[in-house]
Image (cartoon, rainbow, N blue to C red; front, side):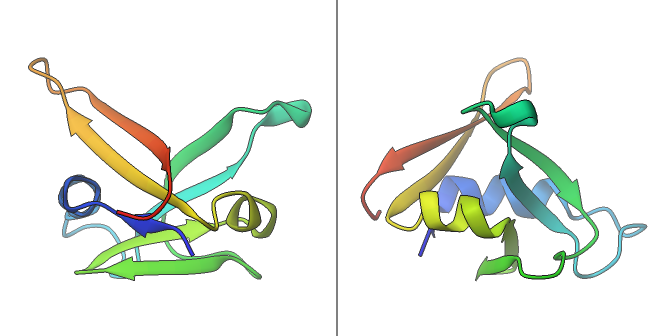
Length: 95
């Protein structure tokens, strides 16, 4: 199962902390468009049917089934640069 670093947990909780968002809001990772190898990441109000749910310390990540398989032994990390832009990265192995 995908693991989350403390940096990813913190960023996801910050991104989904808006009180106007539903309580189940999290980050959803899905396949790229037109068979692309790139993954798409978006804020989602909750999981879609068949999504794998990864939750750690209140940070929720919803994985499309094919992406869940692809990321099964990976680690999601996130950093915020000095301009405030967020960069998510996926690394081999567990944190």
